[in-house]
Length: 139
Picture 1 (cartoon, rainbow, N blue to C red):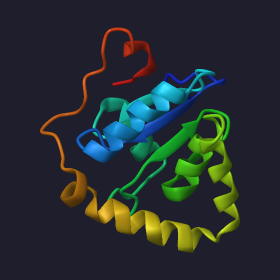
Picture 2: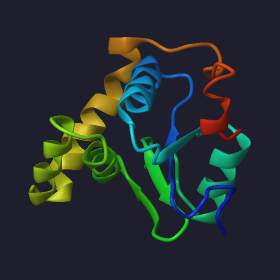
Picture 3: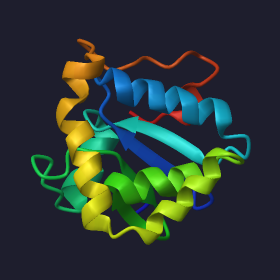
Picture 4: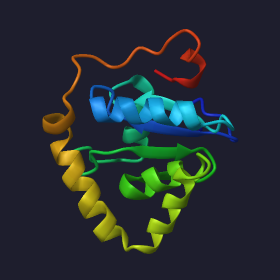
């Protein structure tokens, strides 16, 4: 099942009401010069379908999810680092942090995720992409 994602792309599922997450999506869009990524809010139809299909407990996995039709899903710090690795220099060198055990990386990730609304705020509704960017987003 590919959920409408072409095989040559990966889908970033993100918290659509989180300001930190929305700013991260904007950063990826700006630096995704190879056009490798598409986006969908976890709260949308596509996000909910993927979460249900992979039986993801969003109470425990409250994070970015990276979906690829050929490779499946990764989440939390691994997803963030794999996204960064595709964005070009210098951000792509963050991939070296994959040598750190996931339980350590995810502890840091979870600490930030737990405090993201307090530190960065949240929106009342998901971000609406501009007409130029609409093709990069799934509902």
